[in-house]
Amino acid sequence: RRRTTVLGRRAVLATVPVAVAALVGAAGPAGAGTTGAAGAGDPYFPLSGNGGYHVRHYDLTLRYQSDGRLDGTAVLTARATQPLARFDLDLKGLTVGGVKVDRTAAGVKRSGQELVVTPRHALRAGQDFKVTVSYHGTPKPVTDPDGSADGWIPTDDGAFVAGEPQGAMTWFPANSHPKDKSSYDFTITVPKGRTAVANGNLLGQRTVKGETTFRWRESRPMAAYLATATIGDFKVTQYTTRDGIRVYDAVDPREAKAATPVLKRLPSVLEWESKLFGPYPFTSAGSIVDHAKVGYALETQTRPLYDSAPDILTLVHESAHQWYGDSVSLTSWKDIWLNEGFATYAEWLYSEQHGGASAQKTFDELYARPAGNELWAYPPGDPGSGENIFGTPVYDRGAMALHELRKAVGDREFFAILRAWATEHRDGHGTTAQFVRLAEKKSGKPLDSLFHTWLFTKGKPNKA
Ligand code: ARG
Ligand code: ZN
Image (cartoon, rainbow, N blue to C red; front, side, top):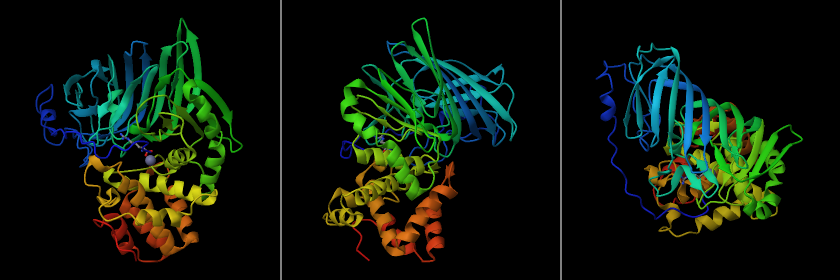
């Protein structure tokens, strides 16, 4: 959720030298059909992700030093989906020491954010393989088309690590598109006294000679942008909820006073959301509250990350993303309203059911905005470019689309649709077209024109 608007700050859009450099690998041009594509085919972020393989698991071993340097070894367990004489990983900045495919040193070439790997022996379609990348350097965030920063963002006591939409590549070599989901192991060593927080369960922590190593495991499929390895001087609280969810909270002491009463409500928020959306999709939860000037929070899987103490609605929003965005992932960034419209609507529902404004009142106030308001600047189902994916139309008009659906099908059907979406696509993916089809199937009503109006029509829609 955005705490400060980034709309209006226009970053210079870099022209993307799509795949040109990737066509010339270390071993010379490969035969047609044996080169993994340099991108996953997303028009908003053409070089995010890669073609030709699926990463089943990332094993990331990181050592962070107080001067900000990072040493890393990433072992990716992958499966080729086509013959591969060459394939790419996404990695921006940092120095690569070497790359191995299985046990053999591979050819490696850097080309912008593409790390081009040429295995000694070409891979067959369907072949399982391991890629080991050793790297080091001082990670820097990437600037997004809307002017915000994401990825590894240094702070005064470590780093705020939030990778949406394209920042995973600033701290580990990745197939960095939500189309590809993987399990993760993290082994993170930091100076004694600092804490390293990643996703999933803490397997153990050990201090040896002035350094502490934290081992984390996320065993549910996770998109690369939702991975974190946030480091700081944190106060840690751990407990298990009555539903058996393991909670790990890490809070910057400067934010503790404001954060503690809000974080305490996480179990009740997750219980409330489980009633509406279906069972919580993961087995661990928690919050990371840093003290940084980033301007947004991120729904890092199992453990949302805040740049300062969140308010209750921000906690509700990031928690709702665990169902919508994390468990059910995008296949294309243009469908971002499936994440942000849903998480925003969760806020409206929370207010409605906890003594605040009704969803209808929130809708009416937004609808009253004049035609020239930024809310109507572009349709949420087709934001047009990566510059617009975190804008007001995606969040608020996306939520308005859901409210219109609710009014059209009635509460009973509406909540059944929300639950079915989370349940049927759990640990997987969903598209806007699939959501529309599900809503029609469940309600037995034609909804094409409703969604067309609220998601795809330019300008302020006329009310039905
Ligand atoms: N998904 C986040 C949220 O709304 C926002 C992430 C914004 N990222 C960015 N690079 N501006 O909860
Ligand atoms: Zn959000």
